[in-house]
Amino acid sequence: MESNEVEIEDAPPGYKSSVWQYFGFPIKKDIDGNRVTEKTKTLCKLCYAVIPYTTSNTTNMNHHLQRHHKNVTAREKTSLPKGQLTMKQALTPTLASSSPRAKQITRLIGEFIADYMSPFNIVENRKFIQMFKVLELKFKMPCRGHFSEKVIPDIYYETKQSVKECLKNADCVALTTDSWTSRATQSYITITAQVINEKWESKSFVLQTRELSESHTGVNIAHVLRNALSEWELTKPHTTIACVTDNASNMDIAVRESGLHPHINKRGLAVSRVARLLGRVRRITTFFHKSTTATAVLTNKQTQLELPRHKLITDVQTRWNSTYDMLARYLEQQAAVSAALSCPEIRRNAREVDTLDNADISDVKNIVKLLKPLKTATTVVCDEKEPTVSLIMPLKFMIE
Image (tube, rainbow, N blue to C red; front, side):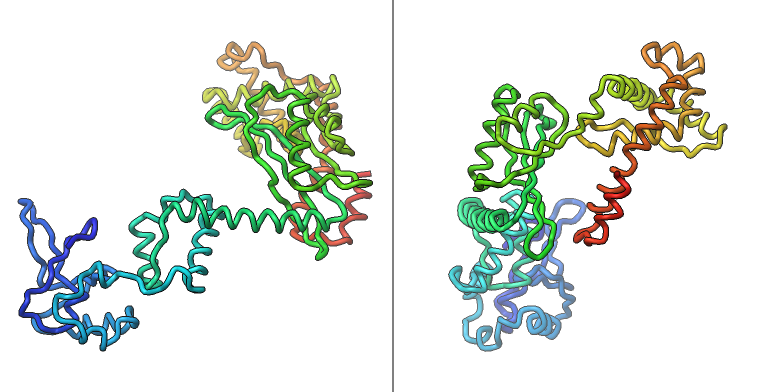
C-alpha cells in the first residue's frame, strides 16, 4: 500500500503478531531506481511514524501503539484474523459526524479557515488530514463542500447576528468608508463600523467590502451606503451616525445623500495653498523613491551632514497621519535633500522637482505643528485597546 510519498510493504504471512496489522516495512528506491524494502525500520500505518525494528522483536511497535494510539485496544488487535484489517479499515473513523465532539472539531476547523482566510481545499491537504489523524484518530475530515456550503455560512450568519446585536445596543456608531483598487485593478468599497459596547470595549467591524463596478459618483456610492445601513439595521430614528472619509468630492456627496452626519474628513489639507505645498513635497519624495541614483546621493549627503539615514516618506492621501509623517521626515532631511538636488547628476533628471524656499519651509513647520497633536491623540487612542477616561481631557486640551 502507498501513502503519497512512502510506499509500505505488508509483513510476510509468517509474522503472527497482531501488531503487524498496523505496521509495515517502508519501500525506497536505490540509485538505479530499484525498489528496496527497508527491514531495519517499520512504518506505522496510522500516523506514518518510523519505528526501529530488529528481527522478531515487536516491542517498539507495541509501545508506539500504547503511547500514541490508545484507542487501538489489545482486544481489537487480537480479535481479528491476521490480514483481515487493512490500512483503510484501520483508518475508518468511528466518531459519528453528529456527535458533539465531531461537531466541535468541525466548527473549530471552520473558524480556523475564516480567521486565517485559508482556502477551502486545505481540508484536503495530506499533512492537514494526517495531523488530525494523530490528534483524533476517529475523526473523519468532512469534504470541502461541507465547509463552503454549511460550516462557513453558519459561522457567518451567527457572527452577523452578534454584530447586529452589538450595533443595536450601542449608543453611538461611527462609520469609516473608503474606495480602493486591488492589484487586479478591480474597484471596491469598504465600510467599517466603530462602537464602544456596554462593557466599555472598543469594537471595530468590517460591515461590507463589495466590488464597485459602476461609476464612482457620489450618487452610486450613496446607494451602497444606504444599502449597508439597511442591511445592518443602522437606520434608527433620532440618532446620528458620524462618517469618516477622505476629502474626495464624490465621498462628500455620498455622505450627504445618505443622511450621515457629522461628516469628518481632512478638508483643511485641501486648502489651495496647503494642497500645492503638499504636491511639491510629494514630487520630491516620489523622485527619490523612483531613482536609485538619487537615493544613493541622498544617503551620501546624509552621512556627510551627520543626519539619520532615514528614507523619505510619501503620504497616502487616505491615511491622515501619513501627511504628518511625510512633512516631519522632510524637515528632518531638508538639508540633505537640498544638497542632493543641487548635484549636477541629479539636477538634470529632476527638472520638475524644486526645493522649497524659506516661506515654504515656514508653512511646512506650521502644518507639522498643527498636525502633531492630532497624530499623538489618534496614536494614543488606537494603541490602547480600552482607552481610559483620564486620557480624554489631556488629549482634548492638547488638540485645542
